Image 1: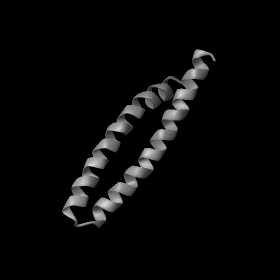
Image 2: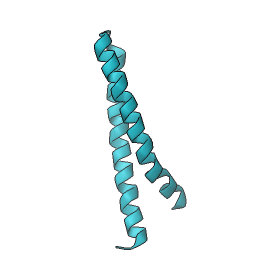
Image 3: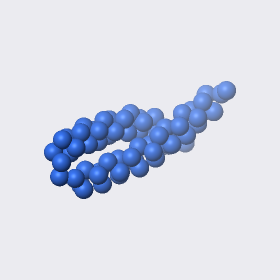
Length: 69
């Protein structure tokens, strides 16, 4: 596999993960807005922070490769 093909595979995987994370973030945000349960809100807020961190990690792989292409 060439460096370009490998880079393309990483970009594709990162883009797929970003899409899934974006969908999941939307679901969590909706559930967070819909609940008054303090424990659930704290838990969902923690989950949202974790998902945002994961999303930032995948952006590091997807965005530079998209601008370089």
